[in-house]
Length: 342
Image 1 (cartoon, rainbow, N blue to C red):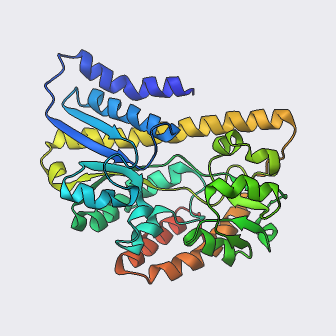
Image 2: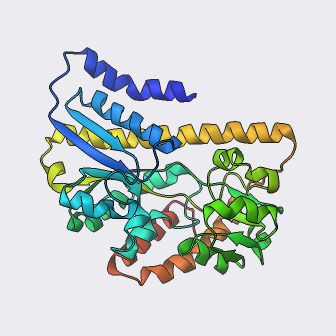
């Protein structure tokens, strides 16, 4: 299904509602700051979500999407939303880990997910949404829903077909859970800014990198110097939350609450499938060129990596009471779905 087709289907219900009668007067406006810059693909898609909300609510709710840093720094949006300076944020949940380490654990439990649909099911049907609100509402925010640009690919100069190939691998990984998991798997992670990844790969400072989605990696030329990407990726997939000021959320009538929740669920599929489509196109183009070899880990190797990651989640669980709740809920879900052994 093409992006245009998905977009048309997504809007079908909203358009039908709009055609059923004259659009009603605008009742609520939400100023929502993103953690993405204006020109970023994800921000462009988020602006489409704002249009979708308007159409889905027949014009009763208007969303103004603001790029990162428009009003406050990316790490300050939670406080700004609670104070009413912003009405909401569209942001990586890990930015709130300074408030409670549990936000960092649920934001990116490295190795947990092999597909966005798994994370969406956990959030929507596995208790994730309820737990997010249990953690967020004391800070004055209400969690509307989750999305993600998708599973990141892994950049490598050397063949990687499973966990054993990570032994001693020099790789770029951000501090925190990502570094801890890779170190536990036997790799030798180092912390480098994204701006130095290409040069470090090219000069042999590192042999691999946790960086971004396949299409973004390709667009930035990383495959020119690292010709053994792992795709689909096996490690990192960020949870991007849509949360709003709780008092403002509570003021909404139930039908608008439902419409906004449904819009985020539908947008999550739209965003992740749009990025996935671009990744597949980039992968097919790369394979046709014959200059790279794409490595796709087996379910067994992914499960092995997930098992190693679990030891790091378990350590992170001791950081706070909410962290333990995240760990217990996450591992119970993964075991129930057959994604991890007990």
